[in-house]
Image (cartoon, rainbow, N blue to C red; front, side):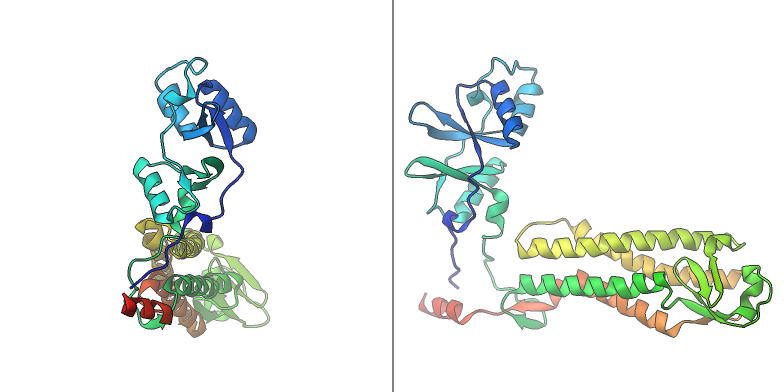
Length: 332
């Protein structure tokens, strides 16, 4: 299959860069970086202003400061990294390879041997095409990365709303019971009505009643409060990690397995454990007449499924070749 090849001219060339002569001192380079608010300077040599490399703030720290070398006397050329500039017609993959091999972030861009800007390794990542069509998944789509981003983001947002926001605001709860059956647990006297009370994320609530868990007598409710906080925190972090990693996939940026799987997986774990803690709490307390909130249980299950689908989004969509790609493959 023939893949479209991108060139440096397809990138947005950053023309807000700084330059410095190779015979300037390291201190001068540091001052210029501070003045311009940039981490890198393109190094030029001689009257012809030939591009010979780049000096970065990291180079100054590692090669000069850490070694105890006098920055006022040392020349830029001794601390910079040498990298051949690219042109507008250089393939993006080649520009990326140059920076990756040197473990640097910036490469100069020249036209007719004159400096016109710089491009970064981050600029190149999103323009490096996949080498194979994604054949793993159930639903065929043209662009699996974009489809996975929107699918994962929508699933995570809906899951967070159903599993966290709605029980947090008391729209539904985990367990329900009548006030008359729960008044000994709540430590309250009789009231005129006998309302139905919901055990939500942090409190027991109903018409005329709002009792935070930390006001209940048994220590298990403090434990539930702590795990409710953990569930809330990890669900928020998990939501953003799913959106971030799926966006990074769409841009061909690499992310670690912990942020991709472990963090949102912990959100699901705490959702499950919350139900277990409630069951333990009612088992070791005064045995009130209590029932599961069917709506709350259903929404929690749906929320967990949506988070798991977002985590495993790679198995939802598979790639299909465009007619142009099929034609190119046949002609090749």
